[in-house]
Structures are given as structure tokens and as C-alpha cells.
Length: 624
Image (cartoon, rainbow, N blue to C red):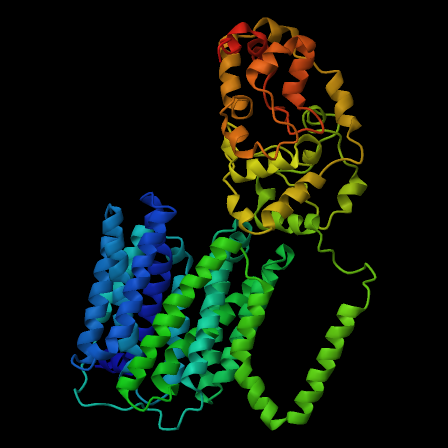
């Protein structure tokens, strides 16, 4: 009896919590992980996720009509059943068509559940502390998803967990009368629907963009979601912010809640642009998300100006279809294409969310607001008109590129420290002094070398080589394990990163050239040189630029400082180079050109490649 009474009192909270858990841990995480495990990428992945969005939008808009003929408990159980079945199917070996069908069912089920739940939420929370119950449900949903055992579970287990929650929710006593029931909130709400719709759209857009960026930048993800400490902190912040939002909404402070949500989310997005400020961004992000998430449930249920259940359902359908599904898709697209949330967009989102508060304040305090606007305008004009003293932070391409280097986690695989009196100086160039390293803010010497050292990379690689390598590493570095970073060139980040890498050089390049002039393959390597080994090394490392139809030569031929000679021209003129000089060119490249060095090749491989380049078999037939 006590359990039954507890469920009756808190079933609204339980329904909100399980809905958020399903959406967060399955629809946003486990299902995407399953798609990646099944090999879906690029267009295939976009097609499947588009099917989910179509299902969510379609059912969100259709549900108000459906609810006119179906009881809410039946509708909710249908939504739970569809969504739960889709979660179970996600563990199967799905084709592209099968995955699209499952995704459509996920979106459709969520559309049914969310619109039904908020339209009739008062029936399941009662009129006693309904805002607090919504806040607890939302906060507990986020907290459960951030429990380390849940967050780090295998996608198949997360899918099963979400399915069991929804099947369990179907067993809750949800029976209601078929008579219309009005909102338990008897006071007239003062927050217009259009303002709510645009505010939610802006906030969901910000949230989705920041979420995608954090998930796909290793350094950001490590500082926000990796490790039990981070996860428990996130869950606690979500729960605390959700309760605060509920208490404010109970006092009709909807504008304040949404403004605070924007303040936290907007500032987090700006801080994410600066790698040194990831920690405060990671604290602000969950706070901003929970503040608007509670309002996203409570507004259609208890704060909407609609006077009937049908009206609330229609408004909920528009909010979840447009602000939820469309806003989320646009945010993810921004994260994919730009890799950041532009400050200009944060400003636009702020205008949308804060405009109602500013207008209300302007009516009540017209004189004070006018004076404030005048002061801000004068300050802006003076800031633009007065010359800079040069002490401010630089916005040069090199400085921006350094931020990109940090944010993309390049330090995880590349060091920037040439060890003195070691083989490093031959491969990578002259070392920096301790004083030079201390001048870096922060120092980027690194402690791992999964890739080559980059301390003097600007002396050893041209901007064109760096750009081509970032876009497609394996095209010009056969054994490279580096992932492609072509997406950085969708905006200026790629060029900024190239500018930064190009700047990594000593004031004088002579140090490396002096060492180069004295190097030659060992006598043993020359004696063991093999023609077939040289041919293979040529195909792996040289053909891309020196074959007439080489991939790199064809793609970048208009941007080479000097078009690389074909192998025939190189072999025909090889007499002008001694075998030692040719080996030095292979190892160290040619300074001032796009010809890179191949410092990582062994002496035997270089000697074999030298032998192949000078051999008649390397030359094309005369008739070509």
C-alpha cells in the first residue's frame, strides 16, 4: 500500500526521469555508438539520423490530433512500447535501411511520449509541488545518465537499460478519466508562446552545438566527461540546477530561468574557444542545460497561455518539433561544419532570449535603460576609434592556430621538444633553450611521440605540405596513423593551424642544414641496398608527387612552389647529384621548396631508394 501511494505521488517525476534517461543515454549516445560499430559514416550516418528527426517532428505535430481520440494513458504506453522496441532492435546487425527504420521509430516514439506527457502531466503530478516534481524528474534523469557505470557501459547494455526503463514505465498505474482536465495551474501565465518557442530554439541550438564540439574534441571531452570525478560532478550540477529552476518557475520567474540558462550556456560556448578555460566551461554547461530542460517540460504543462489540454498539446508539438528536433539538428550541423560556436551566434541567441526581459525593464525603467545604452554606445565607439596600445591579446593567424593546436589535442601525439645531444637533433633540428620554452604560455613540449616532434616543423615542411597532410595524412605519409583534419578547412581554423605550424622554426635554419651536409647513409646500409626495396619505398613515399598522375601532384599542382619533377626527369638528371647528395635530399628535403624530408626512413631504406632512382628500370620507356 505504501509503495502504491508513493508511486501515485511521484509517478510524474518517474515519467519525466525515464523519458530523459532514454533520450540522453540511448538516443544521443548508445544508438550513435551502435551505428559507428556497424560502420555507418558520413552520408549513411546522416541519413539514419535524418530518419530519427523526421519521426520526431512528424509525430510531435500529429499527436495533438491523436490525443483527441485516444486516452492519455494508452497513448503514453504506445509511445513507451514503440521506443522500447526500437532500443532492443538497435542491438541487432542492421543494414542501412534497417537502421533508418529503427531511427524513425525512436523519433516517433519520443514524439508520442513527450507531447502526451507534457499535455497531461498535471494528471500525474497533481497540483501539489508540481514544479518541484518536474525539476526532480529532470535532474534525476541527468544524474542517472552520469553515473559512471551507466555512462561507460557498452552501447548494447545502455540500449537494454533504456528499453527496460520504458517497458517498466508501461507497468505504472497511468489510468485517468476520459473527461477533459484543465491545467492545475489556475493563475494566468504571463510568458507568451512565441517568445518561449524562439527562446527554446536558441538554447537547444547552443546546447547541441556545444555538446557535439565537446564530444568530438578529445581535449574537451577529457576535461568534461572522462573519469568518475567529472561524471559525478556533472550529475550533481544537473540535479542542483534543475531544483533551482523548479523553485524559480514556481514563483513565475520563467524569464529569469531562461536568461540564466543562456548566460551559462553562452559563456560556456565562449570559454570553449579558449583551451585554458575548459574547466569553468565544463561547470557552466550542465547548469545551463538543466535550467532550460526543466522549463522545456514545465512550460507546456503549467505555464503555457493555452487554456485547454488540446491547446497545450499543440504548443508542445510545435516546441518539440521546431525548437527540439530542428534546433538540435542545426546545432549539430554547426558543430560539424565550424567546430565552434561563433561569438556572433551567441550574441544573436542572447538577443532572442534576453529581449523580453530588456523590453520589460525598459518600460519600467526607461530613463535608466536609455542612459545605460548611451554609455555602452559611447564605450563601443571609443573602443573602435582609439588605437590599440599593442598590449591586448593577439588575434594573429599564428595565435589562433596555436589555440586550434591545443583544442584539437595535437599535444596528445606530438611533442615540441628536441632533446639536446641526442638523435633528435639530426632528425628534427636544433633544440630550444629552457628560456625559450618558459616563454610559451602554456608550454607545449608534450610527453608523448606517437607522431614526429614538431618543434622545428616549419623549417622542415612547407605550408602546402602541412595543409595537404592535415587534409589527408596517408596520401603523403604512407604509414601515418593520424586522423584527417580536413574539416578544419571548412573555416579559417585549418589555415590558422598551418600558420602556427609554419612558425615553429628557429630564427636561423642553418643549424639543421649544417647537420644535413655532414650526414650520409652508413657503409653497411649502402652495401645492403636493395632495388626492390627502393621501388616499394618510392611507391609508398614518392609516387604521389613524382608520378605524372600522382594523387598529391594532381590535386595540388597549381599550388606547388615548383612542380615536382616526374621520375623520368629526376632519373635523367640524377647524374648532377652524387648518391650521397641524393640520399641527403631524401632524408632532409630541400629547404625553401615543397620537397619534404623523410627523416624516419632507415639508412638502408634511403640507400635502396637512392639506388632505385638512379637505376634505368625507374625510367619510363622512350615513347612515353
